[in-house]
Image (cartoon, rainbow, N blue to C red; front, side, top):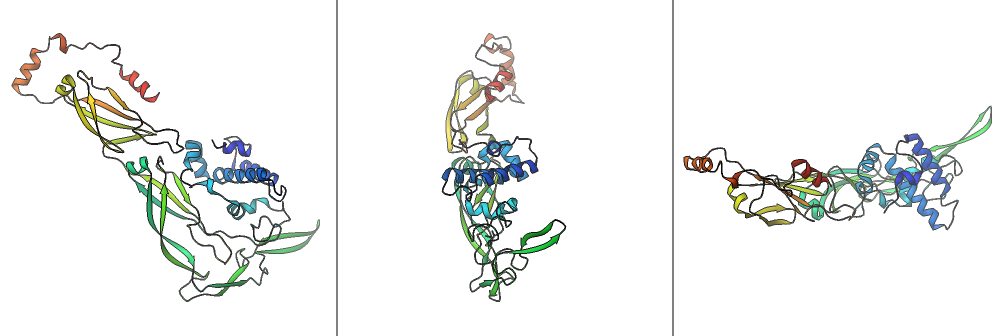
Length: 373
């Protein structure tokens, strides 16, 4: 089981954004690869801290994590668990300031302290609608996505303003002495490269909008509002040495005509007649894997709940499968013929029609308690 993000950073669930950022900076500096060369355990802790910060620093992701835990982001290779070192360096390098020579992180392009930044392309967001059957069984969706790609024939050259470093260093004389500051180069945006040649149909950054079909594997058990991530399927980064952004997939669960979802469990309302309740019958009902036939015993009471085990939704973390709860409702006819009225009137004083609940005939509140236990 994955470690709790709050425990990884050493903060409480009530920690402020500033406290979370401070805690992450402390952990990342402690386990930074430059301070722990060749230490695989330190590198793993470095990645865990970045993964925790990626979620807890984003209000929307933090809210989902607080509600659903790790299952809000995991499954099928999606989510924050797919972060690599390049993601960390490109996204969170500015947090470290002067901790490594005044230049922050520089990715893998030239070490630390004034090196060239690895710029990441912007993310794309799409919404995917799923039926309850697709949620229960998992599905692969092929979606057409319009992405910004580096146009064919585009070439780049070293930025003359920063000499390919991606940063501009300035020295100022102050009352405290000479101070050196480094800022992102405005000419190249930190990439260290500028456009040399580009085709006529490309934009100012040498990019062109192209349509691509992306296969998205959606694991079973996702919930409405969950966001999955397909790494590297966002927009390309400007310049010739960046990494592509990600494709963020928001899940929308479509309502089912007969089944209602509650967590991993499903509910089905089954209506039967007086005759069927008294004599017993069999009924065909919907499940997420197809129709099944269930037996209704003679003398079944209205409100009885039949539990079909493992006919619900699989847990997103593979912690088992929910159940299908069938709620039996005995339908009372609203209109009767004269013969029917005469029959029921003759049965008014019959002992077989008098209510006589037994111990196994649980009350409504007991049924609700059982349903949630």
